[in-house]
Amino acid sequence: MNGQNGHRFYEMSEREIFTMADDHFFGRENITEFSSWAASLHVVLYYAQSMPAEHNVHIAVLDRHQLGGEVLIWHALVLVDVFENEYLAHGCVGGSGYTAVPFEQIIECGLGVIFQELDYWKVG
Image (cartoon, rainbow, N blue to C red; front, side, top):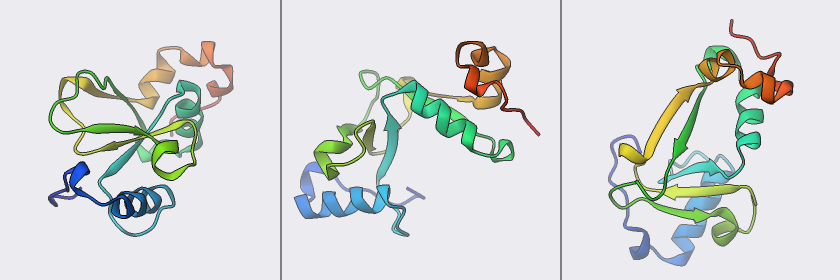
C-alpha cells in the first residue's frame, strides 16, 4: 500500500468496498488495499508463464489460517460478482502464512514435467 494507512474492512461502507474492489480488478489508477489471489494453481502458472522472464516473476502462496494481523480474504464473487477463480486479500499480507518463490526456480525444479505447457518458458 506504498506506506499508506489502510482502512478497517468493516468500517468501510459497502459502496467503498465495491469501488475499491472494482478499481483493483479493472486496473484503475487508484492504489487499492486489495491483493489478488487465485484459487487455481493452473491459473497462476498460466499467468506467470505469460509474463516476460525479465519481470522476475514470483509465485506467492498464502495459508489463510496462518496469516496474522487483520488480513481478511474474500471470494471475488462476493465483492464484485466477477472473477470466479479469484480471491481478494484486504490488508498487508505477510508473516508465517506467506511465501513467494521465483517462477524460474519452479520451472528449474521440473514443474514443466507435470504441466507440459510450461516447458517452453525459459529465462533470458
